[in-house]
Image (tube, rainbow over all chains, first blue to last red; front, side, top):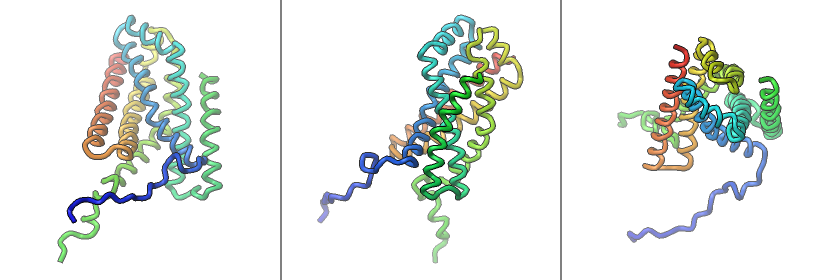
Length: 127
Length: 123
């Protein structure tokens, strides 16, 4: 009786089985934006280091940062910052024991999605 | 008679091992960042697109330099711990440990480079 017998266990539900809904989407986006922002941080820190290093190094970093590639990364990071910001505030609200019923959670999810786009556009317009 | 209390035997046995402290430090850094980030976005956004002299001038002033350094430090600690949570979900055993060590070191190195640049620009 020593050999291990393979048991066909039921598979726990995962992304391809669950129906997509707002709290699920917004939770996943929190993780994606939080970890994805490291790309924007790398670019910003390189730009800052180049400015401290030499005018030639800065010219290179600044050319990358102000190119379409830099615009793409920084605009994406800006939206990610605002999305993660709102989702973080929602997390603090959840942790305090509020807003955990389904209708409220869905409203808060929409608030994060729409709010992040509004704040991104507002930031671009103001700065 | 047991010499260890039930609580003592349960400590560190959860999925996150020391999850309570981890969660609490994420809460603290999140609240700190809630104040830092909007101000940082304004300072950084204004500096972005300026010429070399303008950028040097901006970060040689105390407020933008200190704010940027502080935001970078707190954000990279928050990132390292948040990233650790993600790694713990997907990677286990030696792979997981190596990934956590890598992310932790990467965020410290990024912080160090940023702080060095700020010190050089400011002084």
